Image 1 (cartoon, rainbow over the protein chains, first blue to last red):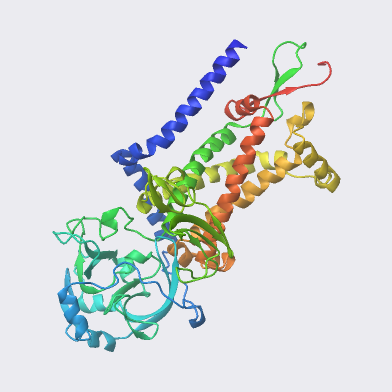
Image 2 (image 1 turned 30 degrees about the vertical axis):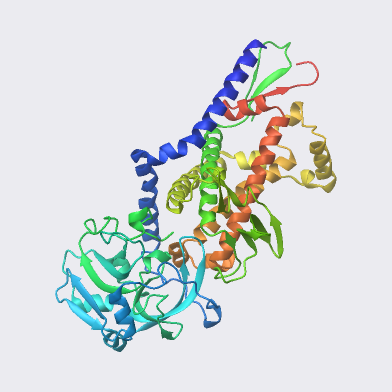
Length: 258
Length: 283
């Protein structure tokens, strides 16, 4: 009986200790760089698995017009508040030009009218916010691959970086500026478009006028709004926080397929 | 469950039988670890958008059938849960709870989320890490137990067990906390079998599939998931409901372990040996 009591006490004690460690330990574990690295290893696994499953480049589901959300929630920046953007907006974006540079053979500039003259793609797709909500909208725009081909990529080109007009976080050094990046696999996917229209009308300011990215098969924060320029790079390590995007620099996954 | 060892000489009537294989024991405890992290990080993720919808789309302006939120009532802040059209005040726990002494609008309180403070990015990292571990662990468990014959031997139901009369008797016995003894304790009873089948073949795979349906990448690879579950918002709702059912299972499971002999049950899941007290003299 004595041994049972001792064992019982030991078991209870160790259970309580393990429980306390589990609850109290989260915070400590979280800050431990090794634990963080182990947790992040799942991201590589997810990306590897999804790239394998998506190797034949299937299209994300396209919906019927009847399935479009009655209201499409505006997320992130509601309206960029720089004077530069206000001036462009006032003029109906007639002075706006999309600049394509970096590791390209021919740096190019497109006005909104130029982009609208190029072959377009229209798709009714689902926008998936990382928070968990979803909205369906109809997007029209130029396939990104087409624009990149026109500029001609240098052999060491690996990522397309989208520099945006909005500052989602006010900082002195400008590091709150929105930006995003995709690799060339996503850049050349047929559903990856530079959208200038939503639900058959020009993009509204809330939804990213004059131009936003649609990279279906990834979450909402990859769908950069207010695109001002596209920079082709070999690595995004020296841009802002070095993680390839505004939210990526704040802890979110660069590969946002889940 | 066939090899047995007499505890001492033939005068004793308690025998130890081998109940759980090493694979079952290891995967069981890994599963406990995974599900614990998954549930708490899952609630963190839920908190980022504490509304559940049905269909192919669902956001703020669309009808939700479960909402956890906070508002003001008679000048006092209040937490609430709305299910269908019915609203229940849940101040203190759901919708509105205290974080470091301050009333904070939060669907699930800090003591139920991982991390305790609002951090969706961190919640996702924990969730997806343990989701991978859970899937790998589940794969090992299913493969081993299919090959070893554990499912066929110990979980397969026979016609006699499923007879309404027998089922009813089992329910009555459980309600009276009368658990099988002696030879009968060597095998799972029909309620145990049914529960384990529902959890192993139903709820756990449903968690994985509905979780994957929330991934835009997986939806592009397997669009059929959207037809099976009726959309990403529906899959999120089913994910939440089946997680709730799993929590219910764990509560009942732990209660049954305690009521039917905690030390014997714990020993069988740690060392694999389960004690059976035989009636009548040992032969």
